[in-house]
Each structure stands twice: as structure tokens, then as C-alpha cells.
Image (cartoon, rainbow, N blue to C red):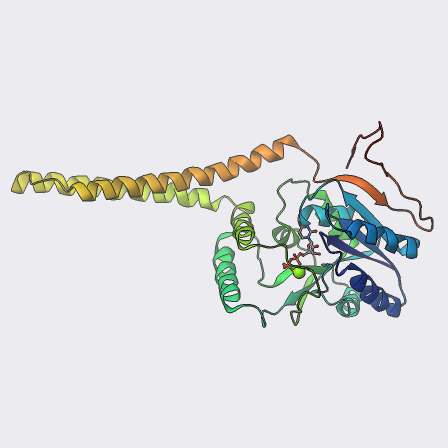
Length: 329
Ligand code: UDP
Ligand code: MG
């Protein structure tokens, strides 16, 4: 069998050599055919130069594609999965937070016939606030959405060829891969590993992007929030009607008293807020439809090395020449 390792890299100059050496030593020890598919996600440091050097060193067992700009890790993963030619594919981070030695364990499970082998990281060592927030988030999200998301089960997994093909057949533009992995199903098995620290470089996640990612998780896989909006709206109408009735009864029985100005303002502001939230929610869905209808590619490639054996580069452009048509994938 042949194993492909897919590695999205964004500004990983500091760690990529170490990653390559460690992973290759593990793969060599397995005595199987393998390839490492790097995806340079528009890095602005020396990542691409390092990838070129790695491809020159082991041309038959290394592939890379380099994006024309940063398209995000999701795009990096699809590009890698498309490049991969193996019977099984492992998706890994370049920062060695996904220990390469676990590939052996994954392979053993793969040989038992599983299609998705998920390495779930434990949260020990994480900041307390972040792990509590994550627990709460997953608890909430799993009650709402249609697919099951597991805390700590990220992109570090091995997929069989049928599972990879299934993922690639999902052509949507807005990709929430945690949900997609779960959506495709197949025979899935999970094991835990101890979370490791990033070896070098720094994380690309900021708190804001985590919040946005969380929102994607809530919205990508169902339209239940829209339902909640409708029920919330109807409940407010009912409460409003009951309140109006109560005022009328009061006025008839006790006469008209001085109107509560503060109450009125508070209610108007609160309702205004609710409406804004609902509009934003609808906007989220409409925005997604907007991007889907454009049918833009997930990424553009500016340079690639795909051959086996021969270290010649494909699609290389010098950036100045007359033929600067980006190849659309
Ligand atoms: N990554 C990427 N494109 C991006 C951001 C990140 O390809 O826009 C890659 C990054 O190089 C790394 C992996 O995704 O290999 C995970 O990123 P990071 O370590 O920053 O995330 P964390 O481990 O902190 O969740
Ligand atoms: Mg990391």
C-alpha cells in the first residue's frame, strides 16, 4: 500500500525541516511506500524555499503545491487531499503538535479495516479558560447541529481512499471540515493522545478567529438557528399581546396612569437588538449562498512539484513574464 501525508503550511519556516526529518524517519521505519504532500498556503516567509529544497532532496516521495496567496487551512487541506495519490491519507499540522509517531498506530487501525482513524488530543496543558470554553461550546453545538462534533478531534486523522474521495466529492465553498469529516461517516475509530506544544513558530489562531470558527460550526450544518429565530419572534409577539391586554384591562379598571417612559425605551431597544440579531443570522445564511453561487475555486496554485522521480517543477512562473495566467484548480 501507499500512504500519503498531507501537510498544510503557513509561515512554518522555523519548523518545517524538523517536521520533515521526524516524519520521514517514522515513515521509513514503517517499510511502506509513502509520499509527503506539502501545501504552502501563501506563506510570506521562507517556507516555499524550504519546500523546494525538500523536494529536491527526496523528489519521488515529496510533492508540494504553493498557493498564490493565503487561502486558509481548509483550502490547504483540500489541495493536499487532491494531490494525494495514496491508498490512505494522513492529515497533519506542520508544527509537530500532531506527533508523527502516531502514524504507526493509525496504520495498524487502518489495516483492521477502519476508514477514518481519528487521533483526539486531550486538553491537558491547555489554558483553563480555553478548555472550559471549548467544552461548553461542544456541549452546546452538539445539541443543535445535525452532525456529531467531538471535542479535541481535529484534522489529525487517517482517511482511507473511499473516505478521501467522499470528502473531495463535497464541492461546497464554505468548508467546515470538522463537520464534513463527521458528515461523510464511514467506519470511524478514535484514540486519544497527549497534546504536544508547538515546536517552533507561532499559532495562527487568534481569539477572534476562534469565535468565527465557532460560528461556522453552528451555522454550517443546519438551519435550526432560523427556526429558533421564528419561534423567538412568535414568543415575543405573544408576550407583547399579553402585555397589551394587561394594559387595556388596567386602563378600564383603574383609569389611565402615567405611562412608563423607561419601560418603553427599554422594550424598544431590546426588540431592536433582537431584530438585529435575527437579521444578522439570516444574513449569515444569505452570505453563504452568495459565495456558493459564485463557484469560485477554493485556491489558486502558483507553483507545484508533482512528479515522481524527476525533480522538475510544474507551473512555475517567474512573476514577471507575459504568461501570468494563474492556473485554476
Ligand atoms: N495553516 C494553514 N493556513 C492558515 C493557517 C494555518 O495552512 O491560514 C496551517 C499551519 O501551518 C499548521 C496548521 O495549519 O500546519 C495548524 O495551524 P496552527 O498550528 O497555527 O493552529 P493550532 O495548532 O494553534 O490550532
Ligand atoms: Mg499548531
